[in-house]
Length: 438
Image 1 (cartoon, helix red, strand yellow):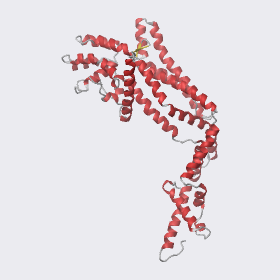
Image 2 (cartoon, rainbow, N blue to C red):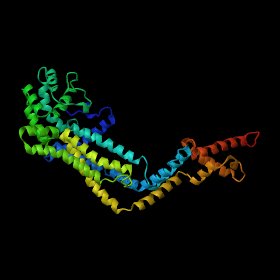
Image 3 (cartoon, rainbow, N blue to C red):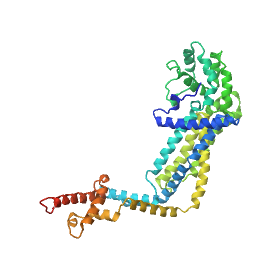
Image 4 (cartoon, rainbow, N blue to C red):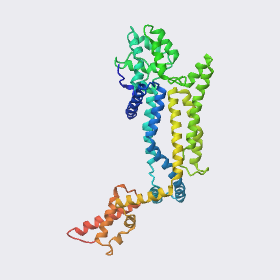
Protein backbone atom coordinates (compact mmCIF):
# COMPACT_ATOMS: atom_id res chain seq x y z
CA UNK A 1 0.00 0.00 0.00
CA UNK A 2 1.62 3.26 -1.09
CA UNK A 3 1.76 6.44 0.92
CA UNK A 4 -0.43 8.65 -1.26
CA UNK A 5 -0.95 12.15 0.08
CA UNK A 6 -4.64 13.01 -0.05
CA UNK A 7 -6.37 15.58 2.17
CA UNK A 8 -4.25 14.96 5.27
CA UNK A 9 -1.29 16.82 3.77
CA UNK A 10 -3.16 20.09 3.38
CA UNK A 11 -3.54 22.89 5.91
CA UNK A 12 -7.14 24.08 5.73
CA UNK A 13 -7.77 26.42 2.81
CA UNK A 14 -4.15 27.49 2.44
CA UNK A 15 -3.14 25.15 -0.34
CA UNK A 16 0.28 26.83 -0.65
CA UNK A 17 1.11 25.66 2.89
CA UNK A 18 0.04 22.18 1.83
CA UNK A 19 2.38 22.13 -1.15
CA UNK A 20 5.29 23.39 0.96
CA UNK A 21 4.42 20.75 3.59
CA UNK A 22 4.62 18.07 0.88
CA UNK A 23 8.09 19.36 -0.04
CA UNK A 24 9.26 19.38 3.58
CA UNK A 25 7.60 16.01 4.14
CA UNK A 26 9.59 14.64 1.23
CA UNK A 27 12.77 15.86 2.92
CA UNK A 28 11.74 14.15 6.16
CA UNK A 29 10.92 10.99 4.25
CA UNK A 30 14.44 10.88 2.76
CA UNK A 31 15.94 11.64 6.18
CA UNK A 32 13.97 8.82 7.78
CA UNK A 33 14.95 6.41 5.00
CA UNK A 34 18.61 7.32 5.47
CA UNK A 35 18.42 7.00 9.24
CA UNK A 36 16.69 3.62 8.95
CA UNK A 37 19.50 2.41 6.72
CA UNK A 38 21.96 2.93 9.58
CA UNK A 39 19.64 1.45 12.19
CA UNK A 40 17.97 4.62 13.56
CA UNK A 41 14.23 4.26 13.05
CA UNK A 42 12.78 6.82 15.43
CA UNK A 43 10.31 9.59 14.65
CA UNK A 44 11.54 11.77 17.53
CA UNK A 45 15.12 11.72 16.26
CA UNK A 46 13.88 12.42 12.71
CA UNK A 47 11.96 15.46 13.99
CA UNK A 48 15.12 16.80 15.65
CA UNK A 49 17.26 16.27 12.55
CA UNK A 50 14.67 17.85 10.25
CA UNK A 51 14.22 20.87 12.57
CA UNK A 52 17.96 21.48 12.78
CA UNK A 53 18.30 21.12 9.00
CA UNK A 54 15.48 23.58 8.25
CA UNK A 55 16.74 26.21 10.70
CA UNK A 56 20.25 25.82 9.32
CA UNK A 57 19.02 26.35 5.76
CA UNK A 58 17.20 29.46 7.00
CA UNK A 59 20.45 30.98 8.32
CA UNK A 60 20.82 33.55 5.48
CA UNK A 61 17.29 34.77 6.15
CA UNK A 62 17.93 34.82 9.90
CA UNK A 63 21.12 36.80 9.34
CA UNK A 64 19.19 39.47 7.43
CA UNK A 65 16.65 39.67 10.24
CA UNK A 66 19.43 40.08 12.81
CA UNK A 67 21.09 42.78 10.75
CA UNK A 68 17.75 44.56 10.32
CA UNK A 69 17.14 44.51 14.09
CA UNK A 70 20.52 46.00 14.93
CA UNK A 71 20.38 48.69 12.27
CA UNK A 72 16.83 49.49 13.37
CA UNK A 73 18.06 50.10 16.91
CA UNK A 74 20.58 52.62 15.62
CA UNK A 75 17.99 54.17 13.33
CA UNK A 76 15.26 54.38 15.98
CA UNK A 77 16.40 57.70 17.58
CA UNK A 78 16.38 59.43 14.19
CA UNK A 79 12.90 58.15 13.39
CA UNK A 80 11.70 59.25 16.82
CA UNK A 81 13.18 62.73 16.29
CA UNK A 82 11.47 62.91 12.90
CA UNK A 83 8.12 62.02 14.46
CA UNK A 84 8.62 64.73 17.07
CA UNK A 85 9.45 67.22 14.35
CA UNK A 86 6.15 66.64 12.56
CA UNK A 87 4.08 65.79 15.65
CA UNK A 88 1.78 68.81 15.39
CA UNK A 89 1.81 69.08 11.60
CA UNK A 90 -1.14 67.19 10.10
CA UNK A 91 -1.47 68.93 6.74
CA UNK A 92 -0.86 66.90 3.63
CA UNK A 93 2.29 68.74 2.58
CA UNK A 94 3.91 68.16 5.98
CA UNK A 95 2.95 64.51 6.02
CA UNK A 96 4.40 64.06 2.54
CA UNK A 97 7.59 65.81 3.61
CA UNK A 98 7.84 63.53 6.65
CA UNK A 99 7.47 60.45 4.45
CA UNK A 100 10.22 61.68 2.15
CA UNK A 101 12.56 62.36 5.07
CA UNK A 102 11.69 58.97 6.53
CA UNK A 103 12.59 57.31 3.24
CA UNK A 104 15.96 59.08 3.30
CA UNK A 105 16.63 57.70 6.79
CA UNK A 106 15.76 54.17 5.66
CA UNK A 107 18.04 54.58 2.63
CA UNK A 108 20.83 55.83 4.89
CA UNK A 109 20.71 52.66 6.98
CA UNK A 110 20.08 50.36 4.01
CA UNK A 111 16.78 49.16 5.44
CA UNK A 112 13.57 48.48 3.59
CA UNK A 113 10.43 49.34 5.60
CA UNK A 114 8.88 46.12 4.33
CA UNK A 115 12.05 44.03 4.56
CA UNK A 116 11.34 42.63 8.02
CA UNK A 117 7.74 41.79 7.07
CA UNK A 118 8.93 39.91 3.99
CA UNK A 119 11.46 37.93 5.99
CA UNK A 120 8.85 37.07 8.63
CA UNK A 121 6.42 36.02 5.91
CA UNK A 122 8.99 33.69 4.36
CA UNK A 123 9.67 32.21 7.81
CA UNK A 124 5.96 31.54 8.29
CA UNK A 125 5.79 29.92 4.84
CA UNK A 126 8.40 27.43 6.01
CA UNK A 127 7.70 26.89 9.70
CA UNK A 128 3.92 26.46 9.60
CA UNK A 129 4.06 23.72 6.94
CA UNK A 130 6.88 22.12 8.96
CA UNK A 131 4.50 22.06 11.91
CA UNK A 132 1.94 20.27 9.73
CA UNK A 133 4.45 17.59 8.75
CA UNK A 134 5.37 16.90 12.36
CA UNK A 135 1.71 16.89 13.41
CA UNK A 136 0.85 14.09 10.97
CA UNK A 137 4.04 12.23 10.08
CA UNK A 138 2.44 9.16 8.37
CA UNK A 139 1.00 11.39 5.64
CA UNK A 140 4.55 12.19 4.51
CA UNK A 141 6.87 9.38 5.66
CA UNK A 142 6.19 6.10 3.90
CA UNK A 143 7.93 3.84 6.44
CA UNK A 144 5.82 5.26 9.27
CA UNK A 145 2.68 4.90 7.17
CA UNK A 146 3.52 1.31 6.31
CA UNK A 147 3.81 0.44 10.00
CA UNK A 148 0.00 0.72 10.21
CA UNK A 149 -0.73 -1.24 7.02
CA UNK A 150 -1.27 -4.67 8.69
CA UNK A 151 -3.84 -3.14 11.06
CA UNK A 152 -5.58 -1.29 8.21
CA UNK A 153 -5.80 -4.46 6.11
CA UNK A 154 -7.12 -6.46 9.06
CA UNK A 155 -9.76 -3.86 9.92
CA UNK A 156 -10.90 -3.55 6.30
CA UNK A 157 -11.05 -7.34 5.98
CA UNK A 158 -13.62 -7.58 8.77
CA UNK A 159 -17.30 -7.90 7.78
CA UNK A 160 -19.21 -4.70 8.41
CA UNK A 161 -16.00 -2.92 9.41
CA UNK A 162 -17.24 0.55 8.43
CA UNK A 163 -20.08 0.79 10.92
CA UNK A 164 -18.09 -1.10 13.58
CA UNK A 165 -15.09 1.17 13.22
CA UNK A 166 -17.17 4.37 13.17
CA UNK A 167 -19.09 3.35 16.29
CA UNK A 168 -15.90 2.50 18.15
CA UNK A 169 -13.94 5.60 17.12
CA UNK A 170 -16.84 7.93 18.00
CA UNK A 171 -15.99 7.18 21.63
CA UNK A 172 -12.32 8.10 21.19
CA UNK A 173 -11.23 11.57 22.15
CA UNK A 174 -9.55 12.14 18.79
CA UNK A 175 -9.96 15.24 16.62
CA UNK A 176 -8.84 15.52 13.01
CA UNK A 177 -9.92 19.14 12.67
CA UNK A 178 -6.30 20.23 12.13
CA UNK A 179 -6.31 18.05 9.03
CA UNK A 180 -9.42 19.73 7.68
CA UNK A 181 -11.64 16.77 8.65
CA UNK A 182 -14.89 17.50 10.47
CA UNK A 183 -15.53 13.96 11.75
CA UNK A 184 -13.73 10.64 12.10
CA UNK A 185 -16.19 8.43 10.24
CA UNK A 186 -15.14 6.33 7.25
CA UNK A 187 -18.57 5.24 5.97
CA UNK A 188 -18.92 8.15 3.55
CA UNK A 189 -15.40 7.86 2.12
CA UNK A 190 -14.26 6.18 -1.07
CA UNK A 191 -12.26 2.96 -0.95
CA UNK A 192 -9.11 4.94 -1.81
CA UNK A 193 -9.61 7.39 1.06
CA UNK A 194 -10.51 4.92 3.81
CA UNK A 195 -6.97 3.58 4.44
CA UNK A 196 -5.65 7.13 4.89
CA UNK A 197 -8.40 8.02 7.34
CA UNK A 198 -7.80 4.88 9.39
CA UNK A 199 -4.06 5.64 9.55
CA UNK A 200 -4.79 9.23 10.60
CA UNK A 201 -6.83 7.89 13.52
CA UNK A 202 -4.43 5.09 14.48
CA UNK A 203 -1.55 7.56 14.59
CA UNK A 204 -3.37 9.56 17.28
CA UNK A 205 -4.58 6.63 19.38
CA UNK A 206 -3.56 6.43 23.02
CA UNK A 207 -3.01 3.08 24.84
CA UNK A 208 -6.68 2.88 25.87
CA UNK A 209 -7.77 3.37 22.25
CA UNK A 210 -5.41 0.63 21.07
CA UNK A 211 -6.83 -1.74 23.69
CA UNK A 212 -10.39 -1.04 22.48
CA UNK A 213 -9.36 -1.70 18.88
CA UNK A 214 -7.75 -5.02 19.87
CA UNK A 215 -10.92 -6.10 21.69
CA UNK A 216 -13.14 -5.15 18.74
CA UNK A 217 -11.07 -6.51 15.83
CA UNK A 218 -9.89 -9.75 17.43
CA UNK A 219 -8.80 -11.37 14.17
CA UNK A 220 -6.36 -8.52 13.50
CA UNK A 221 -2.93 -8.28 15.11
CA UNK A 222 -3.63 -4.83 16.58
CA UNK A 223 -1.22 -5.44 19.46
CA UNK A 224 1.61 -6.30 17.07
CA UNK A 225 1.06 -3.10 15.09
CA UNK A 226 0.92 -1.09 18.31
CA UNK A 227 4.23 -2.56 19.48
CA UNK A 228 5.86 -1.83 16.11
CA UNK A 229 4.63 1.74 16.22
CA UNK A 230 5.74 2.21 19.84
CA UNK A 231 9.28 1.22 18.84
CA UNK A 232 9.55 4.08 16.34
CA UNK A 233 7.46 6.64 18.24
CA UNK A 234 8.97 6.38 21.73
CA UNK A 235 11.40 9.15 22.65
CA UNK A 236 12.76 9.68 26.17
CA UNK A 237 10.30 7.04 27.45
CA UNK A 238 7.34 9.02 26.07
CA UNK A 239 5.21 8.42 22.98
CA UNK A 240 5.39 11.37 20.59
CA UNK A 241 1.66 11.13 19.79
CA UNK A 242 0.59 11.55 23.42
CA UNK A 243 0.60 14.94 25.11
CA UNK A 244 2.70 15.45 28.27
CA UNK A 245 -0.59 16.07 30.06
CA UNK A 246 -1.96 12.66 29.08
CA UNK A 247 1.36 10.97 29.88
CA UNK A 248 1.52 12.64 33.28
CA UNK A 249 -2.05 11.63 34.23
CA UNK A 250 -1.55 8.05 33.01
CA UNK A 251 1.78 7.72 34.82
CA UNK A 252 0.28 9.21 37.97
CA UNK A 253 -2.53 6.65 38.01
CA UNK A 254 0.01 3.84 37.58
CA UNK A 255 2.41 5.23 40.17
CA UNK A 256 5.23 5.86 37.67
CA UNK A 257 6.61 8.95 39.39
CA UNK A 258 9.70 9.23 37.22
CA UNK A 259 7.52 9.50 34.13
CA UNK A 260 5.29 12.05 35.89
CA UNK A 261 8.33 14.25 36.55
CA UNK A 262 9.59 13.79 32.98
CA UNK A 263 6.20 14.73 31.53
CA UNK A 264 6.17 17.89 33.66
CA UNK A 265 9.73 18.78 32.68
CA UNK A 266 8.95 18.83 28.95
CA UNK A 267 6.71 21.95 28.97
CA UNK A 268 8.96 23.61 31.58
CA UNK A 269 12.01 23.10 29.34
CA UNK A 270 9.99 24.45 26.40
CA UNK A 271 9.21 27.63 28.35
CA UNK A 272 12.81 28.07 29.53
CA UNK A 273 14.31 27.61 26.07
CA UNK A 274 11.81 30.08 24.64
CA UNK A 275 12.67 32.58 27.39
CA UNK A 276 16.41 32.21 26.77
CA UNK A 277 15.89 32.64 23.04
CA UNK A 278 13.92 35.85 23.51
CA UNK A 279 16.45 37.25 25.96
CA UNK A 280 19.31 36.63 23.56
CA UNK A 281 17.54 38.12 20.55
CA UNK A 282 18.05 41.83 19.75
CA UNK A 283 15.04 44.12 19.50
CA UNK A 284 14.25 46.89 17.05
CA UNK A 285 13.59 49.31 19.90
CA UNK A 286 15.85 52.09 21.05
CA UNK A 287 16.85 50.37 24.26
CA UNK A 288 15.12 53.09 26.29
CA UNK A 289 12.94 51.56 29.08
CA UNK A 290 10.36 54.29 28.43
CA UNK A 291 10.10 53.28 24.77
CA UNK A 292 6.68 51.62 24.13
CA UNK A 293 8.37 49.03 21.92
CA UNK A 294 10.77 48.14 24.73
CA UNK A 295 7.84 47.71 27.10
CA UNK A 296 6.06 45.45 24.61
CA UNK A 297 9.17 43.32 24.17
CA UNK A 298 9.54 43.01 27.94
CA UNK A 299 5.97 41.75 28.16
CA UNK A 300 6.58 39.28 25.30
CA UNK A 301 9.63 37.94 27.14
CA UNK A 302 7.25 36.61 29.77
CA UNK A 303 4.09 35.92 27.80
CA UNK A 304 5.65 33.83 25.02
CA UNK A 305 7.38 31.35 27.37
CA UNK A 306 4.16 30.91 29.36
CA UNK A 307 2.27 30.24 26.12
CA UNK A 308 4.95 27.70 25.17
CA UNK A 309 4.44 25.89 28.48
CA UNK A 310 0.70 25.64 27.88
CA UNK A 311 0.88 24.53 24.25
CA UNK A 312 3.61 21.94 24.78
CA UNK A 313 1.78 20.55 27.82
CA UNK A 314 -1.46 19.99 25.89
CA UNK A 315 -0.22 19.16 22.36
CA UNK A 316 1.40 15.89 21.20
CA UNK A 317 4.93 15.36 22.51
CA UNK A 318 6.26 15.30 18.94
CA UNK A 319 5.36 18.96 18.60
CA UNK A 320 7.06 19.62 21.92
CA UNK A 321 10.26 18.06 20.53
CA UNK A 322 10.00 20.38 17.52
CA UNK A 323 9.29 23.39 19.77
CA UNK A 324 12.22 22.75 22.11
CA UNK A 325 14.66 21.85 19.33
CA UNK A 326 13.73 24.99 17.41
CA UNK A 327 14.27 27.20 20.48
CA UNK A 328 17.61 25.56 21.26
CA UNK A 329 18.95 25.85 17.72
CA UNK A 330 17.77 29.49 17.48
CA UNK A 331 19.50 30.25 20.79
CA UNK A 332 22.74 28.66 19.59
CA UNK A 333 22.70 30.60 16.34
CA UNK A 334 21.74 33.73 18.26
CA UNK A 335 24.87 33.48 20.41
CA UNK A 336 26.95 33.12 17.24
CA UNK A 337 25.23 36.11 15.62
CA UNK A 338 25.65 38.24 18.74
CA UNK A 339 29.40 37.59 18.79
CA UNK A 340 29.60 38.29 15.06
CA UNK A 341 27.76 41.61 15.20
CA UNK A 342 29.72 42.71 18.27
CA UNK A 343 32.88 42.48 16.18
CA UNK A 344 31.68 44.33 13.08
CA UNK A 345 31.38 48.10 12.71
CA UNK A 346 27.75 48.99 12.00
CA UNK A 347 28.76 52.58 11.17
CA UNK A 348 30.91 51.26 8.36
CA UNK A 349 27.93 49.28 7.06
CA UNK A 350 25.80 52.43 7.23
CA UNK A 351 28.37 54.37 5.19
CA UNK A 352 28.39 51.64 2.54
CA UNK A 353 24.60 51.68 2.48
CA UNK A 354 24.68 55.42 1.86
CA UNK A 355 26.91 54.88 -1.17
CA UNK A 356 24.66 52.09 -2.45
CA UNK A 357 21.56 54.26 -2.05
CA UNK A 358 23.21 57.11 -3.95
CA UNK A 359 24.27 54.77 -6.78
CA UNK A 360 20.72 53.46 -7.07
CA UNK A 361 19.43 57.00 -7.41
CA UNK A 362 22.02 57.80 -10.05
CA UNK A 363 21.25 54.57 -11.90
CA UNK A 364 17.59 55.49 -12.04
CA UNK A 365 18.60 58.88 -13.38
CA UNK A 366 16.92 60.78 -10.56
CA UNK A 367 18.40 64.17 -9.77
CA UNK A 368 16.82 65.45 -6.56
CA UNK A 369 18.00 69.00 -7.07
CA UNK A 370 16.47 69.25 -10.53
CA UNK A 371 13.27 67.59 -9.37
CA UNK A 372 12.93 70.11 -6.57
CA UNK A 373 13.58 72.92 -9.03
CA UNK A 374 10.98 71.54 -11.42
CA UNK A 375 8.42 71.20 -8.63
CA UNK A 376 8.90 74.66 -7.11
CA UNK A 377 9.35 76.68 -10.27
CA UNK A 378 6.44 78.94 -11.19
CA UNK A 379 4.90 79.05 -14.64
CA UNK A 380 6.12 82.62 -14.99
CA UNK A 381 9.71 81.42 -14.51
CA UNK A 382 9.27 78.65 -17.05
CA UNK A 383 8.15 81.14 -19.68
CA UNK A 384 11.31 83.09 -19.01
CA UNK A 385 13.88 83.17 -21.75
CA UNK A 386 16.54 82.34 -19.10
CA UNK A 387 15.66 78.67 -19.46
CA UNK A 388 16.74 76.97 -22.64
CA UNK A 389 14.51 74.61 -24.56
CA UNK A 390 16.88 71.76 -23.71
CA UNK A 391 16.67 72.51 -19.97
CA UNK A 392 12.90 72.86 -20.15
CA UNK A 393 12.65 69.48 -21.88
CA UNK A 394 14.87 67.92 -19.21
CA UNK A 395 12.69 69.28 -16.40
CA UNK A 396 9.63 68.11 -18.24
CA UNK A 397 11.08 64.60 -18.57
CA UNK A 398 11.99 64.40 -14.87
CA UNK A 399 8.59 65.61 -13.76
CA UNK A 400 6.80 63.23 -16.10
CA UNK A 401 8.80 60.22 -14.92
CA UNK A 402 7.14 60.35 -11.50
CA UNK A 403 3.72 61.44 -12.65
CA UNK A 404 1.99 58.10 -12.18
CA UNK A 405 3.03 57.79 -8.51
CA UNK A 406 2.40 61.38 -7.52
CA UNK A 407 0.23 62.10 -4.50
CA UNK A 408 -1.95 65.20 -4.23
CA UNK A 409 0.03 68.04 -2.67
CA UNK A 410 3.33 66.18 -2.87
CA UNK A 411 6.55 67.37 -4.46
CA UNK A 412 5.87 65.06 -7.37
CA UNK A 413 2.37 66.46 -7.85
CA UNK A 414 3.71 69.98 -7.99
CA UNK A 415 6.21 68.85 -10.60
CA UNK A 416 3.32 67.44 -12.61
CA UNK A 417 1.74 70.90 -12.74
CA UNK A 418 4.90 72.10 -14.41
CA UNK A 419 4.77 69.13 -16.77
CA UNK A 420 1.21 69.84 -17.85
CA UNK A 421 1.97 73.53 -18.36
CA UNK A 422 4.95 72.75 -20.58
CA UNK A 423 2.93 70.29 -22.64
CA UNK A 424 0.25 72.92 -23.18
CA UNK A 425 2.80 75.57 -24.06
CA UNK A 426 4.57 73.26 -26.51
CA UNK A 427 1.29 72.39 -28.23
CA UNK A 428 0.42 76.09 -28.55
CA UNK A 429 3.87 77.00 -29.86
CA UNK A 430 3.64 74.22 -32.44
CA UNK A 431 0.15 75.24 -33.58
CA UNK A 432 -0.23 77.10 -36.92
CA UNK A 433 -1.39 80.27 -35.15
CA UNK A 434 1.47 80.13 -32.61
CA UNK A 435 1.08 82.37 -29.61
CA UNK A 436 2.10 82.50 -26.02
CA UNK A 437 0.09 80.84 -23.26
CA UNK A 438 -1.13 82.62 -20.23
